[in-house]
Length: 322
Ligand code: WQD
Image (cartoon, rainbow, N blue to C red; front, top):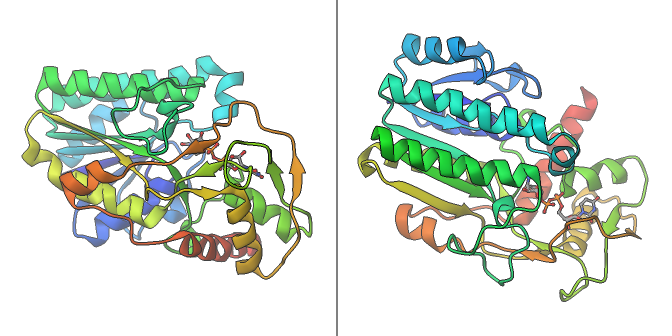
C-alpha cells in the first residue's frame, strides 16, 4: 500500500506519518502548510504543498505516487472559531472532503481513514460514550465531522472502498519534542503557557455535577492515537467495502482540576489555579468507551496522563527556545 496522508505536517498528522513510516509503510503527505510545519516530517518523505480543495493537486498526487490508501486529517479544528466562521469550516472540512473523495473514487483507492472527533457527540448523557451514543454536535466544527462521516461511509459503499472514522477524544502529549502541538487552544498547552509565564492557570467552571466540580475528559496520548491510525490503515484493505467507526480514547475520566494539579507537579512550577467562569457549550463529562476498537483491532492506549503531560512540557520548552 502507498498512503496519502492529508494534513500530515500538522500536530496529529506528523505523529501519524512518523508511526506509519517507521513501521515501513510508504507515505506521501499533502498539506497546505496553513497550520502545519514541513520540519515535522521525516527527512526525504515526499510532501506536496497543496490543499484538498485543489482538485488538480489531489488527482495529480494520487496518480503520481500510486496511492492505494488515504488517511485524511487536513481540516480546521477549532470549535470556537467554527461558530464565528461556519462557512469557512463547512468549505474547508466538507467541500475539501468531497473533492478528495471524488478523486479517491476515480483513482481506485482501497481504503479511506477519516479523522473524526468526540465533538460529534455534543453533550452526551452517559458515563461512557459508545459509538452508538446518539450524535448531536454543538458546533459547526462538530457538524462538519459528523456530516463528514456520513459522506465517507456513503462514498465507500457506493464506490467499493473500505472506510474508517476515528473519533478522537482529547489528544495531548508528543512522541518527540519537535512534534509537539504549537497551538495554544486546549487545556494542556493553555495551562503550560500560563504557568511558564508565572501566571495562575484558569479553570473554566468549578460547579459542574462532577466529583470535584470541574469538567471531566478522556485524554489520549498522540503517540497512541498515531498507532491506532497505523493499525486501522493496515486493516482497512482486508475489510472489504464496510465501515469501521471507533472511539479513540482511554476510557478513563480525568478532571480539569486533576490535570492542572498534575501539570503543576510535572513542571515543578506550582501556581494555584484561579476559577474562571464556565466556557459556553462545555459538557460536564465526555469519556469514551474504548471497547469497540479493542475488540476489532486489539488497539489499546499504552500511555497515561503523566506521559502526556511530561512530553507536552518537553515539547513546550523545545518550541519556546525556538
Ligand atoms: C478541556 C477542558 C475546558 C483550558 C475540544 C473539542 C474537541 C477536540 C478537543 C478537536 C474543558 C477546560 C481548558 C483552560 C480549562 N478538538 N479548560 N482551562 O473542549 O474538551 O474539546 O478540543 O478536534 O472536539 O471540543 O478540550 O482542551 O479545550 O478543554 O478549564 O485554560 O478544560 O473548559 O472543560 P474540549 P479543551
